[in-house]
Amino acid sequence: MNGTILIVDDDDDTAVLLRDSLRKRGFDVDAVNSAAQCLERLRTEPADVVVTDVQMAGMSGIDLCQELRQRYPDLLPLVLTGQGGLETAIAAIRAGAYDFITKPVKVDALAIAVGRALEHLSLRREVKRLRSAADREVPIDGIAGNSPAIRETIEMIRRVADSDATVLVTGESGTGKELVARALHSLSPRRDQPFVAVNCAAMPAPLLESELFGHLRGAFTDAKRSRAGLFVQAGAGTIFLDEIGEMPTEMQVKLLRVLQERKVRPVGGDEEVPFEARVVTATNRDLETEVEEKRFREDLFYRINVVAIPVPPLRSRAGDILLLAQFFLKRIAGRTNKPVQGISGPAARLLMDYDWPGNVRELENCMERAVALCRLDEITVDDLPAKVQEHQSSKIVITTESPGELITLDEMERRYVRQVLNAVGGNKTHAARILGIDRRSLYRRLEEPRHDQGKPSEHAAGSRPIPTHPNGNGASNGTNGHTTVPPVAEASHPGEVEQS
Image (cartoon, rainbow, N blue to C red):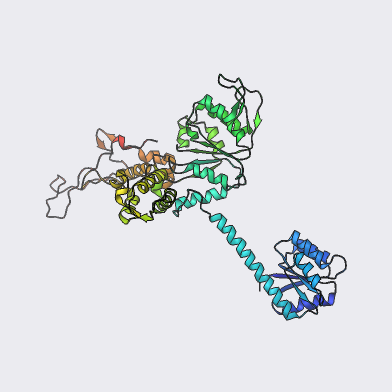
């Protein structure tokens, strides 16, 4: 049986006898002659079970049990007591001993006791492991799913939660960015401290500055009393700056200094006040593009983008749609006391085919409506919004302008890039990541082909001579196997190019 045993007895002959006898029965055993030697040994060589005599010179076996319980709570002591030593046995159990064996010691009985202790220890460790695993697998409120995209997000949340690093949560509107921020807070050591959220797009710069940093009495007309800002109000908790991409430029400069110095200066004040809160930000904008186009400060971007957690759109989590729908259904039905149990097959198919431009928020709203309208014990097609019922699925398929049209590989690639860009809401960074190319290559693939006086260049990439029929007109007469080859399609209209 796996496990390490340490014998403690100041009678050297007894210690050696017990050690050798247990070794013959397959145990990993060693022996020492005092409690002091036992504690010294355990500092460098851990053991699972300690078998100790009670009456020893120096520290007794009872005192050793107490010491072991304090220093090594996962270790199990066994005590050897004299005949009729019931009071000693009780004292040993109270001191932390797992079991006791009476003297004279019968080796078979000792082996059984040691084996039982190791089995108990193994079970206790397994329970601890499973409990820890269960804690890690506890669903994050509102964030559920088995798709690779959301599992990657959940794993990143769990990995970063214990850290104090500044986190940037990215994703389209309605994907659940605030839920990610709250999950980071609730899974962190700061969970018992405040979680303070503010929408940076909801107020002008002066008001936002006062809200975040606070103000002193008389700092402006309505400042009738001093007020601590949200950075200070968050204490040792978490402050969540939502839609930071919408923050006015003049506030970006001030926020950068605050993050650098970890201090805020209230409006109208001369002294800076330190804060302890962890900072989590979120945006539905492509901040790299915003930086390139000078709408967001590059230095602030790098300051908030220490760890980035992307939240995938619902359309890239097709396997999670019904799981989330059932989750919302159960929660809403329970709250409203309606006997709705599930979703009919046709309704489920419509939910799966819909693109969900509003993401998880739109799905939750859809299920709220469906439960309210439902007259049966399951959601039917009639309970769904008209736009879900009438939606035509738009999967990424490369199509041509008209039947029989042939296009170059360059044009096919361009159209596919546009459709991927459309699928991720115009976010060029995400599109480039999906396509496995860098942003510069993405821009190059979106460029329209150049023409020379209305004709494709002879050396243009991907262009090839079109074989013609011997009569010179390029058409087939239907008798010699040649096929009519229409001209190469012109590039898509400029309006088809997605805006960032």
